[in-house]
Image (cartoon, rainbow, N blue to C red):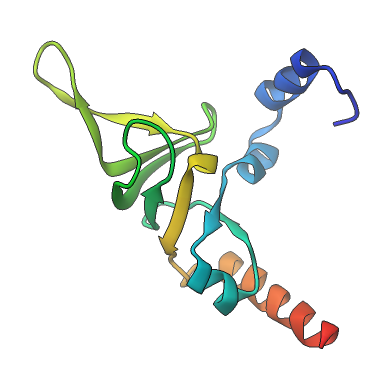
Length: 125
């Protein structure tokens, strides 16, 4: 994004194609995972265990049950609220307000990302 204008930046985020929106949905890793993977953040994935770092549900941990690329929101198992009718619904959270505590590493794309980060670390040393 080249523009400094917030309205243009927001518009670019909302109108971005899904394969680019996936990059916006990344969360920080816990300190232990940072050292282990030599990376600061990973994109979120269904099944990852996360901790909410901001907002009303700060400190709550749970697994990601759904990732909505169109709305750029993540739904966590333990983050729910009651509607007036009594029905419980998941509360959408932006990925930047989460911290990954236990990622799924069986995903082949994730393995590549982690291996690439480790190779870069070895080249620096």
